[in-house]
Length: 193
Figure (cartoon, rainbow, N blue to C red):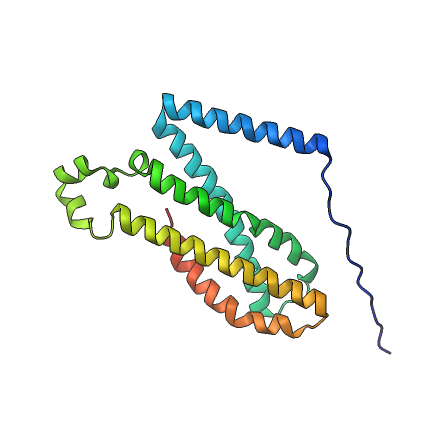
């Protein structure tokens, strides 16, 4: 005997105006603290921002990695957790944009090999210059972030289509994307920042 289960769309989460105000005030205070630190101790400010961005993007990429593993192993037990990990991946575009800001504006404060005066006096850094230079660093950061965002969008779009059309074949279609993502993730995360 086959049972048919009807899925209901959950109501979207709506944040109260008071909570939005509290979060906006916290973001504003954090931004002011960062700007103040930029003028008093720029190296510390950029290092703090880099740590926060790296921590956040690591969690988001780990969530995508979890989703890819679930698709590859064809795990059915994790279907009800899928939305949680998709939500965790939502900060990738924001953290990616902040990564680019860090490279462009704070890179010289964080990486000695981006300082031309130091590179001019260090033969080892001169030898590594084809890899450790601003242009290549920026290009690979942009490529990594762009492709992470593409994978994140594909994973979420296919997941939404599966729920909308009630078609389990979408999970099978995710296997090739998952394989490519896991390989790309292993390589790109190793070279990120």
